[in-house]
Image (cartoon, rainbow, N blue to C red; front, side):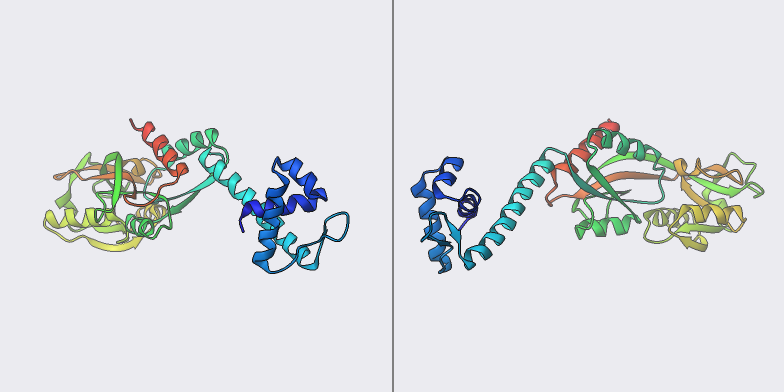
Length: 292
C-alpha cells in the first residue's frame, strides 16, 4: 500500500463512483479497481459495500478513510514544507553567539536578510565559545560565532573580525590619564573577567603569564554589562575587545595595551562533516558577502 492507493481510495469516496474517480484522476478504471482490490487483500477487509449503486463505505472503510485523509493531508504538507525550504520561503536558523561582541553589525545583516526572506526566523543563543562549539557538535545549533582558532579540527570557519583588546579602567584610576599601558604594569591590579567558558579568559590569562604574572581575578561573569558596572564601582579593571569597549559608559576610560598588543579573532564556525540546510547555506553566503 502506498500514497497512490490512498489517493485512489479517497477519490472514489469523494466522487461517489470509480468511473468518476477515474475521470478526475486521469487514471484508467481497471488500474483504480486493482489498486482498491490490492488494499482490501492487504488489510483482509472489505472497504466498500458493492451491492449498491453507489460505492458505500463499510465500517472498516470509514475507519480507513479517516486515516487516509490524515495521511494525505500530512503528505501534502510535507511537500509544501520541502518546497518552502528549498525556495527559502520559511524555516529557522539557530545561531550561537558570544555576549562579548558588538552585535549592531550583526543585527544589520539579519535585518537585510529578513527583508529578502521574511519567513525565515532566527533563534539567537548567547554562550561562550566553548559552549557554542559543544552545541554545534550536539546539533543544538546550526552555526556559531566564536573565537578563532577553534578547539579541534571538526569545524570549518571564516574569520570576519580581528581587533585589538583594550584596557578599561575607572575614570579616577591612576592609569586613566595615560594613552597606553604595558601589560606587565597590571600585575597588582584586580581583574574582572569573563568566565572560563569564554576563550577571552584564556587569551588574557595566558598573556599575563607570559608577561610574568598571574592576574588577580576578583570576579568572573558571563555578561559584559556586569563587568561594566563593576568597573564603574571601582572594583577593578577589565580587558575587552575594542568594539565592545567603545560601547561603555562615561565612568570608564579606554587605553591601549602594549608590549604585547593583545588581539582576538572572531569567526563564523560550522560542522565540517554535517548536513547543512539550504537556509543555513544561504545565510552563511549572505553573511560572508558583507565582509568581502
